[in-house]
Image (cartoon, rainbow, N blue to C red):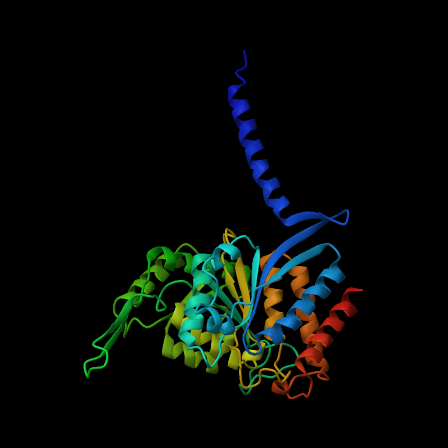
Length: 394
């Protein structure tokens, strides 16, 4: 006689797996107006200064993607959490702010910062809590020279400037461990501790290597400073060596941060995926932005790869209070961050639509903001990108 009990067990297991798959899909799809559409919820935090200005153009592009695609919807809720909120309430977001955000699929951030509020307050009370609470341990920043632009580096073109920096985003040098003592005396001192865990270091390195496997050069460059920082950086180096052995098809380079910064200028064409600690990655990515046209063209993604929590997308640039309200801020970094968001959602075709529109506008050269040598306003540049999106999707 055949024993059906093992078969029943297998069937039950398959049923549970299918339940999980269906639940995951239902979370993304909804019936709206009698149609089944991809549906994502976004918490929008415009922020301070030029943040609301560039965010307006980003949301305009998002609307164009919805309309031209026809099968996707992004439900947006705007949060007024910024430095003005801090000046009114003594905090950058409500006590339950993280609880509010956790049920969203995505977070879209403009720019944070105002002269009236110290930078460490605005960052440590809004941006860093979001990154850490939602395990956004990957900070992904492309260093890519877009078509229509020239690099300030002489003799370096588009083929030379196309790599990505993977920055550890939740520990390292930006820990909250330390303090100040003997304040107000000649012996005053400040101590800031670095925190490098094996778990945190391994996962960021493995992300970098997995990313390199998908790219053409199959190369990972790791930033270190083990000749000067004698505990955390040798620890980092050891784990780089261990993880690299799991990826024999990927070439590994390990450079001290000072030399690596110089190589960004002298030989950027040698890089593919650069992986760095929190502080080193922060510095390198601003340098990377400078060699491809400036911070107005530099997007950033704060990713929770497991997708258990929302990921956050933003421009690298700050709130630029000196030009806020003048309508001349470049919105491309904000709009490019939307393309990164589409990639995160496994919608590369929509990412390509956004990037093609940006590059078409840059190559056309007729509607550019002052930082790009033009006279257009923020709104005019956003409108032109939207026009190109419709032009290529109809």
